[in-house]
Image (cartoon, rainbow, N blue to C red; front, top):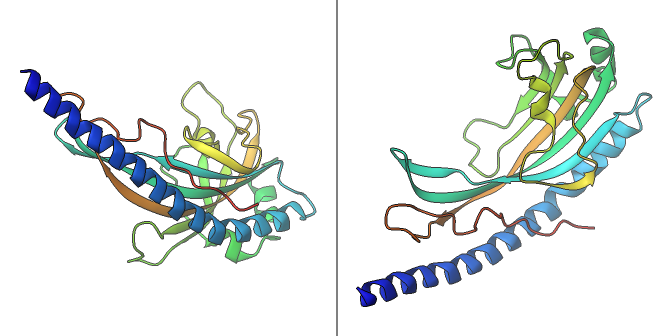
Length: 223
């Protein structure tokens, strides 16, 4: 029994050391990706802030999460996926004012006009542009402009989806939440930074633990 426990701890000790190396490698790759993608986003944000009516909320965040590969209800392995999220938001009186502001923004920033209903009640898509089909995971991107109606009841409000995510790190600006008492125009640009396999640590016989302990590698943004 003692030998089995010792072997079990040894295997996971090796896994923990491997996770440290994986974290260092992901940090390096994220630092490189941020050096490439963050400066153009900063420039685009400055252009929006220079509009006659600048956005009231403006921030750039690095958003990382841990998707899993599952077998039934048991996690088999973890991944880390990160993206760069740029958000600009204007309080508006109505959809007409939202469209008027969009008329001052280049299509390359907000995408093409769209029609149709959003899966999120209260959020109406106005513009959208996605990366080409077949773009590999880790390199995809999307742009969107959405009219967000003020909250009118106690149901979940779609405007909550435009605040900073749980594991976000704010790189520029302040990651404020939208005021649910107001209508908003929200412009977003989401760019994948990469996705990496982490495997798992088996500190118990059945269950797979996150090798990063729930704390993602983040990289270092350029000054």
